[in-house]
Structure formats: structure tokens, C-alpha cells
Length: 208
Image 1 (cartoon, one colour):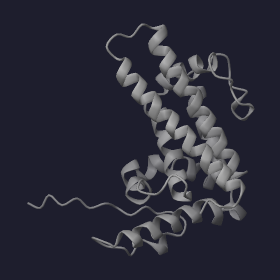
Image 2 (cartoon, rainbow, N blue to C red; image 1 turned 60 degrees about the horizontal axis):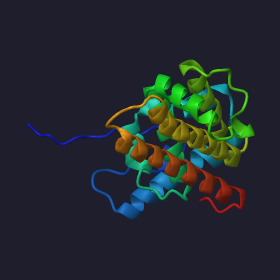
Image 3 (cartoon, one colour; image 1 turned 120 degrees about the horizontal axis):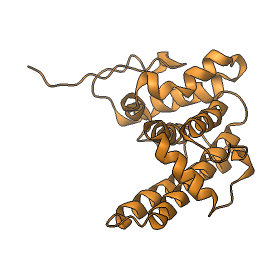
Image 4 (cartoon, rainbow, N blue to C red; image 1 turned 180 degrees about the vertical axis):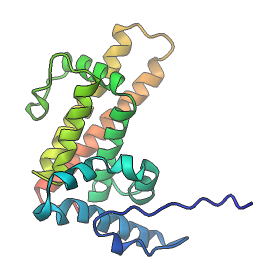
């Protein structure tokens, strides 16, 4: 029996640009497909945005699966549109996979890192439902609103959560987990830096 895995192609706006790609493809072709899909989501849908489209974009990781998104976007550079989208969905996936932990870490982080105004207004203290709603609200900016603002807000959330992860381990006196905690917090901080960098590029029109 063949063990070959077949990936379904995501049905995204602009799917005609890449749904005909079959089997092994040139990496440059796949990168072009990823870039065109990302551009269609962020640039092409703005004039026809409505509640249904916003919801579809926000829940794209749920309906299509992270594996499918990874196939298209995970190899894209952090300073590209496709790479920025991948990092946005990666952040949302973490929050949805473990909203309770995300809420605790975000709450802890707010006591150690100033919370940017772009993510203010969260209930006191934020719970799992609130942080899920927050990341969905942030991600809705992919279709409506300012994309640079979306990236800045996501970066701010990740930065606060990263600080909360470090201080949570310290405050709770978690033993034997300091290295893993520091490493995961560092990766989350790197994600925040990458999103912020992409936001600045978007402001100058250089995020492509």
C-alpha cells in the first residue's frame, strides 16, 4: 500500500494561480503561488470585504488546516507578505490550541511589559474566551482595516505573552523547566519582532 500523502489544495481567493500545481514543483513556483495567495487575501479582498469573508479569513487555519497553510507559507521569509500571514495564523493557532495558558501568560505579561494601546480594552483579567476574541479581532484586520495595524497589534500581543511566559515560570517556581520556558518565550519574542518588522515594511509599501 502506498504511504504517499496527498495534500488538498486550499480554496483561497486567487486559487486559480496555484491549484493546478501537481506533485513535485520547482521551489520558485511554489513561492510564487504562496505570494499570490497571500496578496489575494490581503490586497485583493479589500473592496468586497463583508462579515462572511472576514470570518473565513479569520478561521482559515481551522477550515483548511495548518498543514495546508504551512505547505504554502511556512517557507516564506518573515519580511514577506506570505511570511507575515503565516506568523499571524501561527499565533492564532497557539491561542486557540491552549487559550487558558495564553490568557494566563498575557495577563502576567501585562504586569511586566507596558501594553500597547493597540491591544488595550481587554477585560480585567482576560480569560480564555477574551484572548480568543482578541486574536480574532486582530486577525480580522487582514481583510478590513489597516494591515500594518494588524501586524503591530499581533506583535504587541506576542511580546506581552512572551514576557508573561517568563514571569509565569518564575512566579510559579516551576522547577526543571527554565530552559524550555526561556527558549519558548524567546521564540515568541522573535515572532513579535518579525511581525513588528513586517508592519514597518508595510507602512513603507515594501512588504511584498
